[in-house]
Structures are given as structure tokens and as C-alpha cells.
Image 1 (tube, rainbow, N blue to C red):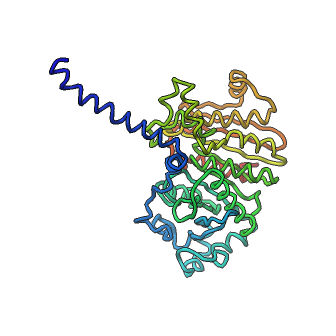
Image 2: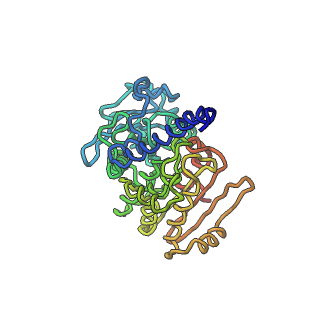
Image 3: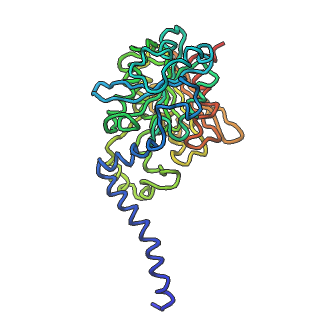
Length: 389
């Protein structure tokens, strides 16, 4: 090797070897359940050191518009939550709310905000399950709550899963579904809101929680006003073959050209999060009414928008009671689709008894900001039947 070539060999080797070595270490650690769950849920990455989530006014909410409190799960964990009042309701009762003690409530049932929810026979509630990492008020999440409550009459209940924020415990698939079920049980049995006036919704990881919670209650004969998934995915092993953390760090996508190796690494995934299967089960269990909505941004760089195609296919197939092959399904779906000139579309299918499944691809919003899009607010309105003539 010439001196000139050797001069470049070492820097080139280092520049290639370091990222490859880091990636290999990441993959090997990811095969261990402890590290895998830390990578997946990223629940320890938050801003609690400099943000007090018991002071929601920091994020632009009115005094006592948000009541922080906790609820218990069936397996003994304590889950941190926010009850967020809709501003039109807040305005009517502003004087009473202003004198309520601010901050965390040890007994939310004694608060003015709780009574405004429980005593209103027309109250509607959106239960929101956030994505991975952070806490209940981190990043874009407060803006999501503002979008849902600033001009509507919908209450919002948001939670931090076990291990997130101020909640106790360690995250797992079964555990997060317990947490979501605890939020619904609180809404129905403590706040007294029937399922017909509850929408459950989630973003990113929260869509998997939403799917698990929807199935959990469907098996008990409980049907919600709506089930909404924003930036969802069909199942975790399949997602990891195309997912890029933070929009640029690949997980298992480098192995897609080697299917046996890809399947080998997928076999190590502990929490499968089989949302497509769960939602298809929800469809088959529906006895009276189902409003199921999938929303995804075309420019989502983290979870590819074609993941929604798999969710729509699984649930739509459940309505037609047969499993069409890919070509037949695409031909059938095209007949149900309205395409727009910007590349976005809406696909809708209807079935008995009163099932509407809607997939909407919006042109903008990325992975997180899509939560603030009009499509999400409209999905909530449709779930509550406000589009009926």
C-alpha cells in the first residue's frame, strides 16, 4: 500500500467502523428484554428535572383548566393523569374554577372540574394515549390537548403509562394495556361517562395501546363512540423492519435484503403489539356500532404511512368476512377511495350492523404535528356522530 493510500485508510476505517460498531452494539443489546424495553419505550427520557407537570399553566392552560391526579390499575400501579376541561365549559364556570386549589388533586372527585364532567349528561370525553418517550406534557403533547379542547366541548383524559413521568412501575405490553383500561374504567365507573360518549385515541405507540384497550373492552361487550389511531402501525416486528428512530436511525431495515436474518432478529421482539389483529377482532365483535379511523401524514419520517394500509386491510377484510389476496384487495379498496391531487386520500368502508372504517392520508404533519391537524378533530366529531344530518 502506498503512503498516500495508507494516509486515508485509517480515517476511512474509523469513519466506517465506529457507526457500524455502534449499530452492532445497539442490535445486540436490543435482543435483551431489559434494554429492548428501554429502547422501545424510552420512558426515562423526559424533562421532569426542569418541568413541573403539576403546573399545567406553564403550557398555556387556564388556571385549573387541567387537574392533575392519579388512578390505580388492577395490578397495583399508580398512574399519573390529567383531566382537561374544554374551554367553553371552563368559561361558563370560570369564577368557581379560579378559586379551586391548583395543582395535583389527592381526591379529584371533590374538585369543581370533576363535577363538571360527571354532572353533565351530555359530556363527551376523549381518552388520549401518547407515544413513547417523555411525559404527559412533553414536546407537542400539550398542543394536542389544546387542539381538542380550545374550541370544542370535549373533555380530555390523558395519562402517563407505568414507568413514564410520575407513574409507578415498569412498561410492558400487558402493563400499558392495564394502564389504558384503568383510564377507561375510571371514566365509566368513577366519572360516570358511558362508553357511547367516549372516544379512545392514540398517537404512535399510543395507537398500539388504543388497539389493546379497544379489544379488551370489546371482549366485554363495551363499544366506544370511536377508536382513532394517528400514525399507527400494524405490529411491532413488522414496523421495526422499516422504522427509523428520530427519522434517521434505522433499526432492522438494514436486514430487509436478507429475510432469514430479518426474521431471526424479529423473533427477539418481546412486546409484539399486534394492532392489526386486535382491531380485526374488534370488528368481528362489534354488535351495534363502530367508528374506526386511521390517520397518517404522508411525510411521516418515523413510521411509514403504508403501515396504515396494513391496518385498513386487516380491519376491512374482517367486515367482508374473507381474506382477499393483495391484488384483489387493492382493486376493491380503490373503489372505496377518494384520491386528491396532492397525493393524499380517504378510503372508507361500511358494513353491518353500523360499522364505518376510514383511512385518511394527509399531506403534511410528519409524525408528531399531525396530531394538531384538522383531520384529527374531524375524526373525533365524526365518532360522536356530529356529521349526521
